Image (cartoon, rainbow, N blue to C red):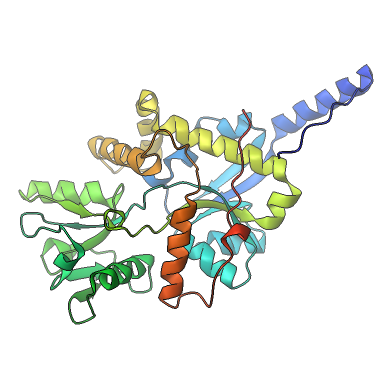
Length: 332
């Protein structure tokens, strides 16, 4: 995409035919399937905004945005030809590449990982990692939250006998009943919902962000197959430009009403004040620094993520990040 375009002089009749073909193609739209990592909620508001506000259509694309979930693996669907683009976290990408999957990352959505732990600040104070000693900490065994917590504990010099790890499910009851002191949540999604519930009981909430203690673990990114990037670079560029435009517009405070209306279409059960809070937190996670464009790939964050996973024997060896990280420049 850095190659200089060549200027061609064509007969007027041929130029007219080509213009008609381009217009017809734009109207019809290239069909594209985009598999989300999770459900249709605030964490994918950019894609939902691009879909509902015609940004994909303006790019000449007919994009089907499919919800994700525990039974939906975007990388696997890329390999099988069921999807053209998808969302995946860094740990998913690294594991897939280590097994030979030709997946590449063309943009990074979250600059700050939304996976954090919530706790009641009136019952404890966490100023340093050593303060985790003796705590009951919820983790999803086999999930990246377990990987992150194990790294934090190792950094603090804490062993398996210094804390109690509690197996987390989708039921928050153990946290509400104080059986677990630290509960993993997505800061922008479940975080505001649980905090609102605790406020009703007169309880406060605080959030433990691993990045504040030097552990950066990259979250959701936009992925595709290496072959798609090589053989259809113009399609990749158009798709990514429309998707990132959706994120830019959805997170712009000037478009908050439109963004909330879009979220209510897919998430009607969440109260509007909570959606507004979720959207504000998402802004801070996607673009914490206005000088860093939405979609920028944090290479140092990827390097640390790869080191963490290798250190915990989740990867068989060093993974070549240069072969994975393929940022796509967006032409205006």
